Length: 158
Image (cartoon, rainbow, N blue to C red; front, side):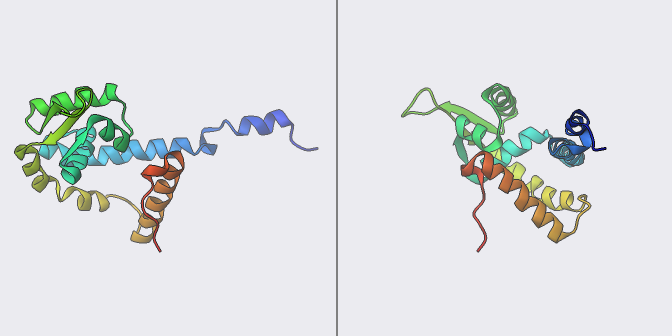
């Protein structure tokens, strides 16, 4: 006889059958790999990704930073306040719209970039996949992100 529908449905609830779990677990593990490198420059992982946005753009609204990092203002505001206290950035109201807050890189924040520049290469040596697998994984992850928000998808390769 065949499997009962109830048994088949319960298989869907097994942790090993979920896409979300290996993504979640890998994300947590990879962020742990960053910790010793980030400790050297005095940043947490979330501060590091916020700095990457600023190193790339120099200034950005809190709203835009939240969109780019998939962080809500409840997470971002205290994070940025702490980073401002450390002298890495400054926040100010936009002149054209006082409701909007602009985040700008300071000289100290810009100098930190020189210390952080080796981190991506150091992390890539920790990832147990070859270059082609890495590219495939990267492409697939951004493909999924692009489906959740098309503005986040990277440009397609020709």
